[in-house]
Picture 1 (cartoon, rainbow, N blue to C red):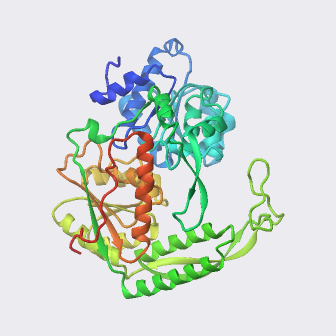
Picture 2 (picture 1 turned 135 degrees about the vertical axis):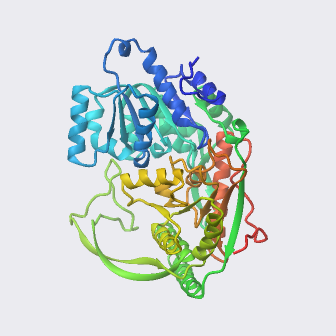
Length: 520
């Protein structure tokens, strides 16, 4: 039983007590329930119980996390484990890698915090180490068993392994195997045996074309859940946080501006015609997805198109246009290092009906002293919004992929302190790991393709520490565009994930009927 020096809530103590004897465990709680605290307490108990650590022997803990989470973890250890030496390893430069190598050789630190890309760069240094404990945060990032990141994580040697993810099976049950293999490589050693038992191939016609997709096998799902019961804990916020407000979903419908509508209709007609002419070609789906993304962008703001020449590596293809690959699955180069390729880039600018609506909502809320979080997939949309907000005198923090680490920490702190009224970011950069619960309203200009990413983004404000009476999630959607169809596909995918994880209700899916309008 934990002595609870961190002041964990009862439901967190329950998780720690259940998982502490298990060498490989999965904390699958919903985002916002304090998985960092649970994993940190499990690590403390591991180190406290190990006689070698008590004798002063060097047995390090490794924390693997996305880039955006490195300093969040470092700050957590500095606050709650101040007596232990912690090193954050970026590893993208030679200087960082040399510093890391020296720290490993001299055994100078107790906790090593590395991002997943850094792990790939430093794997030759890390693989020989016998780690006491490896914590894999946002572990769904290793779900693709063929990726170099997944292979690198699963190659590590550790006595204790803890995986953290709010969406344990990001899209399909196949991806769960890589996480389980990391947790317990002996019990979950064979992917193919796992797949044969728990996965089935079904026909999917939702895209208009017949294709085979991998789905959970309903006949064996009860067995898989029983096997996971002893090593995994999964709670939803509504089950353990009585004081957390429900999410209130709203939809704001807008009509595209005349310029947007003309551009959208032209792109849509071109896309439909192209698909009709190339429906039997193997690359059709890839091109169609790219065109759908462009339609999404046009629904955000007015596009301009520019033809640019970029240098691309050339690869061998067969007569069907498919890439030729080696035994490791890598594409085989055609022998030419780089070839010039013309590409059409899309740039977004005003007018934008979605940004008009977002501005009205934000101005009303901030005038009443309320803070707002805004997310989009596209950094250009965030740039346009921030420019408008600054012109209106509303101090805003822009949190996108290009935002530097120092600026990121400053933005999050200023938003928490009230110096910033609006946090505007891309879902990929700001949708995970951040605590933004000082705001109670979140606006989506558009949603990510993966449902788990959307849930993570929502739970930047819907988490422990949120004391508002209502948490409002607003989707700004354009009529007669891809918004409605894509939104329903995301909802359907999330429904399947929740069934697999045993969730008791589907709180993400909500009505998007046109009668549910906010004044614009």
